[in-house]
Image (cartoon, rainbow, N blue to C red):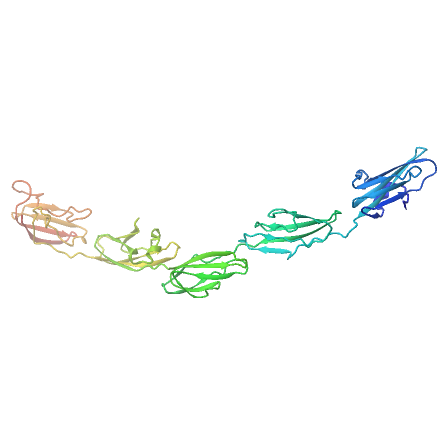
Length: 462
């Protein structure tokens, strides 16, 4: 029997060294009796403030019998911390109380939690099969297992739960033996990032058979292996390396595989740089011309039609891009000779090139016919003089054999601002009847630029 030493106040309980007992043991305790008759009240609490009584499933109190009220028998059933309190009241009405701390220890060795394998288990992102977390080698008496969190596990209370593919998770394993003793350990199940093949999307060469180095070194993943493939070009070197030397236009594929067998693919297209070709075009004086500058540019299927622009304007005319990607050149009025301009064209990847367009503006040969036949057959129906376009002003007067003016024009010729050619109809002068003039010889005075005069005859044949 343990004799408990009386102290002045229960408040000293927190500072006292606890008594240790084994779970399941039955112990007797007593305090000295004071003089006179006294009553005793024995209690056990689970908190130092002595407010929460221990339940009977944790501890059991028994009194030995009459005359031994200062004694108590305790059955310590459950491990933990307890406080044994005795309250004594004398026959004179005075009372006091005292408490002592106890720790109930287990009767066996504490459990040890163990998880087989490395503290970090890494699996591939493409892994769709389950893996087992094995804690079966944990030691202890009649262990209970608890994995936390339970997410992605088929049974969080098993010693060998299966991890179903999910996100990276750290699991805390708690094992508890039959006496309530616990131990913990943890394991991290890490899902590796998926491999990612990375190449340039489009690269360009100057000629179809030019070699170029394709770069897949920016690909990401763990323990990568590389494989370059193509059905269109030739892989000259580096088929199983991050970079490959290739020849030929077309699409090349890069397959990468990480250490877990997960695969990623990317592709790169090898194309030609856009090449704009110089053009030469001819036109006549005062005549605009439409130029299809793209007809000799390549590659045709890569040209962005909306990208055509004039980068250097012509000096002797105007160049503009129409909606159908044709450039229209209009020479300055009466200019003859050479002119040029530079245009730019791009592909859909913003690769651009420039080319020059040479424009030859030709003068028309000057020619005055000796006769015309305005008979309505559509052939030679007008008194058409070639080569008038280069003159700013052209005046025409036509007379019959008696000197009467039958036709007069201040702007002779065809085109904007012109009055047209003579069709054999009298417009001025004295004539007999109405309508077309008669067949015969007529005389004209042609004045060019106000000072150059040409006087000749023209035969009109109906």
